[in-house]
Length: 153
Image (cartoon, rainbow, N blue to C red; front, side):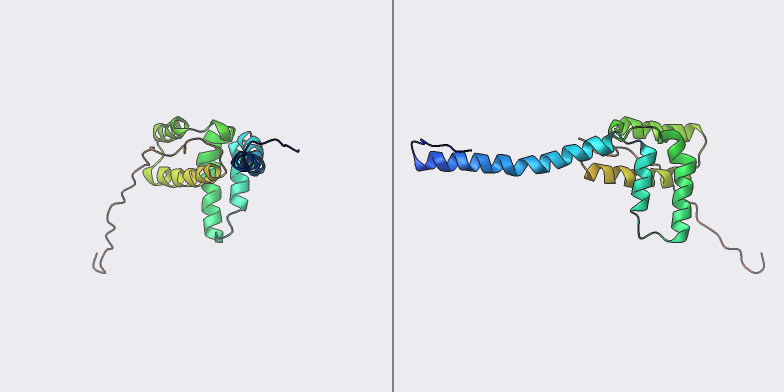
């Protein structure tokens, strides 16, 4: 593209700056749009599977625990939901369903933590305008003090 006929050097510099900014913004915006199109339409089950594959620091026991949380609590309730449909009401509904189903507070807290980690990863990709777990009150698990019996007891 060639332009000419600027009245002043400042006008020419301003036009070049506009062109530079427009060119610089396109790939980044386009890459984000492609990410949103790819991952936003993905179901939670697929996204969680990809997210889990990226968790390189998990030990064998942690993998078993994560699989258990996914298969028992997260996927049955959220597995078919599209990633771009999550908001704080969906997360609240998930927690309320767990409460109605009589799931213990420890399991609720663990499931919420994993859901939060997965949605945080999606939020970093730019899938959400607002973080879906922002403002959601997590389950409060308060374990009772453990008393170890003495030898006489």
